[in-house]
Each structure stands twice: as C-alpha cells, then as structure tokens.
Amino acid sequence: MERKVRVRFAPSPTGPLHMGGVRTALFNYLFARKHGGDFLLRIEDTDQNRFVPGAEEYIIESLKWCGLVPDEGVGFGGDLGPYRQSERKPMYKKYADFLIENGFAYYAFDTAEELDELRKTAEAQKEVFSYDLHTRVGLKNSLTLSPEEVTARLQSGESYVIRFKMPENRDIVEEDLIRGRVSFNTNQLDDKVLFKSDGMPTYHLANVVDDHLMQITHVIRGEEWLSSMPLHILLYESLGIAENRPRFSHLPLILKPEGKGKLSKRDGDKMGFPVFPLLWKDPASGESYRGYREDGYFPEAFINMLAFLGWSPGTEQEFFSMDELIESFDLSRVVKSGARFDPEKAKWFNRHYLQQKSPAELAGLFLPVLKEKGIDPDLQQLERIVGMIQERCEFVNDIWAQAHFFFQAPESYDEKTIQKKWKPDTNEKLEAISAFFETIGTWTAENIKEQFSAFMTEKEWGFGVVMVPVRLALVGESSGPDLFEICELIGKAETIGRIKTACEKIKL
Ligand code: GLU
Image (cartoon, rainbow, N blue to C red; front, side, top):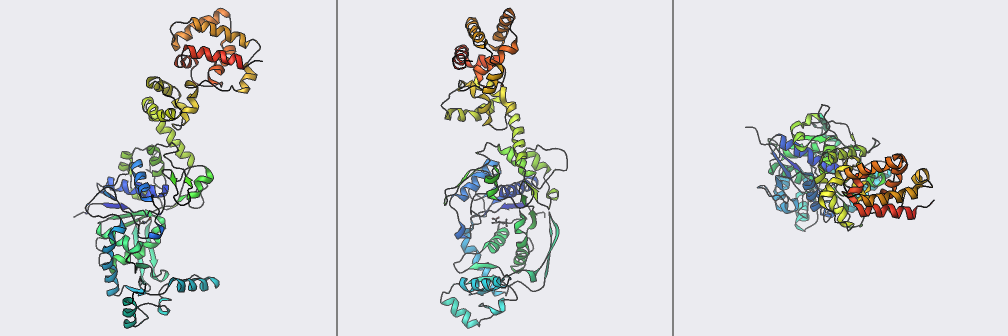
C-alpha cells in the first residue's frame, strides 16, 4: 500500500527564521498539499546552548503569516507528539543504547580540552583534526579502553559522548529527488557525536529517530544538510529501521543579489532589503532586523517570490496563488544550482499583488497608518482616494506619499515649480479663482470642472497658466491625481483656504 506522504519542517530555535528557512517550509508544504499528505512542524531544540528565547514563537508566527499552517506540530496538535525534541528526551536513549550494544557506536571520554588540544596541533600543521576511523584508535573510548575501565568510568559518572562508528570504505549512494544520484565514501566521514551524558541526543540521532517515529516519507531540506545524509542513511540502517525510511531532497542555496555567496542575515541590512519574514529584535544584543511583513510586503508576494527561488513551473506564468503553486509544484523542477535572490523582483511581485487588491481592501490596510497620524477619515472618501492613486504604489506605505495632501495642507511648495510657473500676475489670478470658487454651489469634481472651464474661457486664461499654480497651492507639488477630484475631496473651504495660504506664502 502507498504510504501517506508526510513531510516536516524542522527548524532549530536558534534565532529568527531566515527567508531560506521559509522557502524550505514552503516547498515542504506544497509537496504535502500536492500529494494529499501531512505537513509537520518539529522544533529541533536539542542544542540547549544555542536556544534563543522567542525564536520558536517567531517561527510559528512566520508560518502563520505566510499561510503555511502545519497539520501537526508544536502549537498545532497531532497524535505523534510531543513535537519539541527537548520534550522527547527520554525517547532517544534506547536508540543510542541499541547502537552501542550492536557495535555501531561507542562511548568516548575525551574531554573538550583534550580535543581542543588535538585540533590546535593539527591546525599548526595546516591539517584538520577529525575524530574518525584513523584517529579513534588512539583516543579515549570504549574501542580502546578495557570493558572494566569503561564500566568504571560510566559508573563514576564521568561525562561521555556516544559516537557513531563510521564503517570503513563503504560507498553510500542515494537518489536525491532534486540532485539525482549522490555518492559518499565513508572514509571521508567522521564519527559524529550522537548522544551526550546529559541525556540529550544530538541533531543527527534525534532527527533520524523522530523522522522514523513521525512516519516521515520525504525529507526536504536545505543543501547544507546534504553532507549529513550518508550518516542519516547509515543510522536508519544500523537501527534496523531502513525499510520505511524517508527519501531525501536537498534544496539549492539562496545566493546574494550579486550572484556569488550564500545570502546571509547581514546582507539585508547592508543592501537595504529584508532577509527575515518578520521583524526580529535580538533579545541578547537588542539589535533589530527588518522583516517582510513590517516592510509592507503582502504574504502572497513574499510566497510567490520564494517559490521561484530554485523552482520554476516550466511555463511563462509568473504569478501564482498558493493553490496554483500546489497544483504546479514538482520537486523534479527544483534546480540543483544556487538560486540568486533579487530584491527588485520581490518589490515587483508586491506591486502586482497591490494592484490586485480592491480600493476597499487597501483602504482598510492603510487606515492604521492614518490613525497613527491622528487622522480619522471618512471611509468612503478614503476608498475613493486610494482608488485614485493605487496605480502609483508598490507598498501600502506608499499611499501616504501619494495621498498626504488629501489629509493635510502642504507645508511647503516645490521650489522648481515656483520658479518655472509662478508669474508676477499669478497671485492676482489665484485670488480671482478663489473668489470664483466661493460662488460654486454644488461642490463636485464634475461641476467644479464645468464651471471653472467656463470661468477660464470668459477670462481668456489658458489652463496651462493657472492649473499648475492651483495644484501647487493644493498639493505642494506639480504632479498628482485629477485636480478637481482633489478639490471635491478636500472640500470647498479647504480648497479656498489653501489657495489663499499659497498666495500669502509665495510672493515673487
Ligand atoms: N534542525 C535542522 C535545521 O535547523 C533540520 C535539518 C533537517 O531538516 O533535517 O535546519
């Protein structure tokens, strides 16, 4: 019988989730949904030294914001929990013991200082120390010490680790679903620590045991874990649980915008774009890192952009809703080579999704910005304003730059426009216009335009001569939406008031 597809996103709460992590979650999610399977969230917090408060909450909030809601996991329930590894601590010991009893692993008693010393000596000779099949024979472990001594050390409570005994000269060959055939020779691999005397497993053991117990069918994770794959495969084999072990897929790296090197968390600050889904305040340093959400990106734009980092549909289509992504997603269309991140493309996606929104929805999103400025607009009017300037915006926050004059009189006037368009008789003309505006009864854009045109014809003034100064008086700049719409929306008194103020302030 076909097994139900089950995949997991297994971040370590060592800091905020990088956008690369979100992409891993996304590809797992798409794969699960596409195959009618389950998407799990497992928190891999075995390394207590690297635990960062708030990181787990950040991960969960990020997934929710992106719409990548797990079916099971920390904060989401499920039958195969707990899903936080620190809460599974008692489960791992028996697997470590099994490996020892069957000769696949051994106790090692070398102290951190001793190993450090060996590392330094190797470094001085321009070599790298590795605890492996060559060096293990000369070190302090249950392969070299007598059984009595090992028992004595264990009983005395001496601290130890359990290391995997990497077999000699075996080729571990695997069909990675993205990379194709990948092969490793065990002579190149070291004896990784699997378990520590504080009772905690390390990442490798916990990861394999949990993928087994949580019935994971496919491991989809970042390229940086490819080198751990042979060890994981050997662990499944040694533990006698290889039969239903997951298939592996390793996603390509996300590269810096210039195309070289892995995108790092510092790049965002240096180059002015977010690297994290949400704003992150580092609890230790107090430093803040910007987030896509707070920078005004829509989650659908962020997701659409991420989907294209390493995957492509093989068609011309560029805009994909989550449902369309699920429909089209295929691991075989994920590339092996690094995917270059382009911040401009992220903005471009955002612009697209902003244009798709109705003015009513955008007005709702913009309202908090106004409220923060102490402005409480009429909602219908706000919708009209937003509809007028939507086309000029990439982000919700751009709305203010495009529409501030609907809510506030200009504080200054564009100097260049004054120099070009403000003539000696402009003040006089504007005064006549404001007197004329007083006489207009029905203050709608349409009627103002009609009456004003008649007035202009009668005066024999060209539109070109007065329109820019009027706009300058109302807006402060020479560009913006339709002038008569502005007049209607700010109201008669305000229109006249602004023209008068401009005449007082701008004197040639
Ligand atoms: N805990 C690992 C991480 O932080 C998970 C790697 C894996 O998916 O196996 O990325």
